Image (cartoon, rainbow, N blue to C red; front, side, top):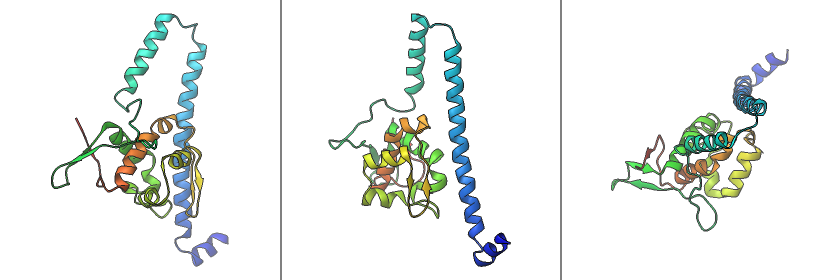
Length: 195
């Protein structure tokens, strides 16, 4: 009887609830998949024999190689500690290219944030417009805190990403992309990379 009343009084209410449940389950599945992969890796390493010096050197070299193309180890920061983006545009301002970290930020945003915060961070019915938030009152430390620990606001609940090391390691890159968008230095859509 409750669903009939809900559907009668709020025709779109059940759809919103189902959408929120669907998006939450996707976030949880992603986090669980990542944690299971990390646990499997940790278990495999723990079960292996005592590593030799040569094994440790090979592991460090392969780890360094695998992280180089994805993001810079030390993103550039301003005097106030905020990551600094680089955007270069043609004279007409239409063909813009970004540094590698900002491009990685776009990729990370697209795969982890877009479902709730919408295309290019403009918001949706379940999550706020990040451009407005960054221009109003969200600085880098606050952004880092919300992404890491989650947030309960008037529009809903943002999940914590503290168990997703992939996201945590690239918070500076995500912030650079969103900051470039909020500052108006970068138009929406997929950015091109600087050489």
